[in-house]
Image (cartoon, rainbow, N blue to C red; front, side, top):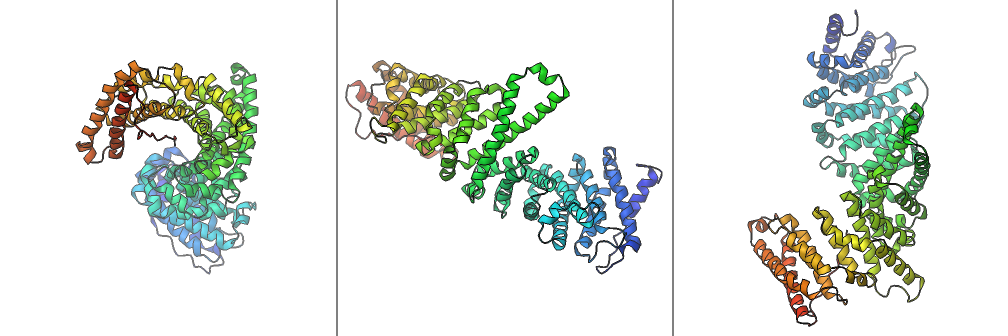
Length: 613
């Protein structure tokens, strides 16, 4: 042909690919002399070369090469799967032809327009079958699998077999990037097809990275996370990636992302990731990653911004530094989600190195420099702080934890403020327990030190200030922390100086009773009033209580009205919450009226605590 992209070349490829693939006899020992094999090799090499050029993407669509290439490649791979011999002495290698065919599909499927066309012609089912076929062929030649992944014989059929898996997993990765294709992965068994490859080729970075990229695209789509979780051994292999490929940042980031996402909702996934020493290995690697990040952070602090941006070396160092931060962020989120199950959360919270590193970094680094990383670190702390004294390493540093919680409750980031309030709430729950420590003992001293730190660092004051926040999610968590803090004998005396009644009354007045979305905040405000009225400390002033009585009566009336509304009947709102709010508002009104008469609250005014999830 005269040159790439010429009309003669296009006609030649069109003719060659329009012809069916002749059967290659399974017993053929002399492929070197087989004219069909020679023609196929030349054609697919040519198509592969053409597919490398981005400007040819539209040509493939226009000439309808894409569907033809898919069908021809599928027929070829089916023969590759069953052929008795792949090559003759010095002859054409059938595996090499397969690699060029799959390589062309790989290049073509990078284009968004081609992805749409591949989806429209049902290419995913064919690609999944090809994936199973090339894996099956590799297992026939090398049942152990691992030796194949480690093979280094350049030009041998072993290398071509591995390359076939590399190419087909990239095609899957490209198709997974196209939204409408994703739901088809479950329909056509895509996850079942790549699971065994991940298991047997875990040592091959390229193949593993391709598969992890596929899983990263799929795990957030509809019900595919549960499909990934159900595939035997996948979560354990993803966890092992963190151990085996510690220097491959893109792989670590994506493996951590997939695991963290699936572990966010499933105890079974947490167990699969953490059991058999898995959590210990992840923690060990986490400590290693943290050491690298601390060194990078130290250098960043010492170097000026101009010096970092003035040279190519500085730019490269910055890119590597970002890789480290990204890895730490993903593995931190993974640990935070694993820690949502108590068995594993207590282990994480009892690891001295992990706890010390996280606390020290939050104390040292400005939030604005690494917001997403800092949010994940705060999330990890808030999750393990839920286990109180059982998280021994964290509780021994509770004074520092209180200081961090107080500081981050004042940053200009609502997500960080919510995490800080969760921390304060969990600390308050731990400080609330009466009679848990021996009087005058070490445990009592620790509790007093923690309470003092929370008060001195402004954590309690922050809760009150945040009741005026315009984000109701922040207000909700501030109320939750306040409820638990009021119930703590070590913290409640500090509330005397605050105008608690005025604050809660103002909040109730500010709430929009026409907005059912604000019902959870209304419920917590009533519950907070309940706890205050039931407290042994006189935290309310009579003038504030008088102002709140009509407001609470309005809340009760509102809840009664809402319970008979169409929204309640259609289950658009939580009727159980409405019922609780109506009853509690009635009790609060009675308690406030008794308070104003200088009488004790009614004996049935027992108020539940609200441990934050």
